Image 1: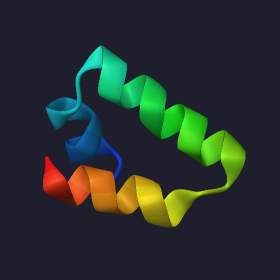
Image 2: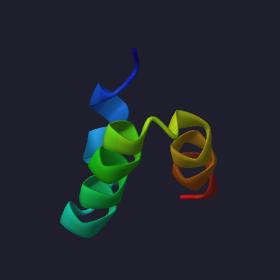
Image 3: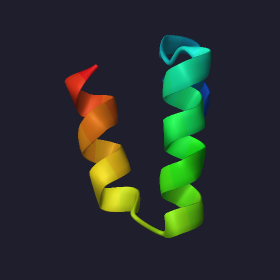
Length: 37
């Protein structure tokens, strides 16, 4: 998966949200947030 370029653009706070979404299994919402950034 393309997580390399995503992490470069995400801040520490955003990355925490991404990890939380991954744990919840809500990857679809996570993908939408990343696209907005």
